[in-house]
Image (cartoon, rainbow, N blue to C red; front, side, top):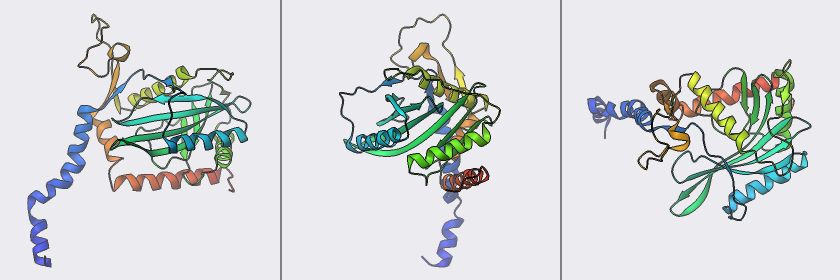
Length: 283
């Protein structure tokens, strides 16, 4: 194909339908199908069921690293599956002296009958009496929902060492948590079930997204029996669920599409790194 043929090819109007569909039609599909249980089911993982080898290895290393900085393991929990054939799981750790919690989170998928690790990260979190929070993780991607101003969330993907990541988190807490009283939302004890605390944290994130116009809440319809409708997949807690708003579907989808996704990610990492340096980080 010579230059003239190339210009002729690009001049055909239907060629431009491809990027139009990519950026405009894809969010419409999300708008029509996106659903989240308003009260997600969080349960402890069955310790007798073996985990995929790479997941088991990651949790083992995370446990050893957390134990070295005096964090106690509170169990492993299954999270609501974000997509079919994907399992989300986290190991929860707490340090009641520092009033700080941490999670080692993994997402692994079943591809052609084999489980493979898709994503993994560590995140520390400190909660305050006014229901605000500060969290610091080493995720290598942005989240789907916007973070409210009072909930500071930073990501440092280059901080693989758990102790170093905790130092960065405690520095952010000392700098940006001034005047606020930290609280521990998870009871002390090795046998404590933190399912309710984790569920409340997820529900709070969903509600924040609703207040910012990304999600729409749908409550149970009055007068209906609580019997599960087999044709409605989200029947938990009487059918309460969130769907994506028109605005939310487009913004969430665009944040995940190339070339927008890598640009936003690099901007986020650069901004968070600058914020950490301004707090006095010399690592």
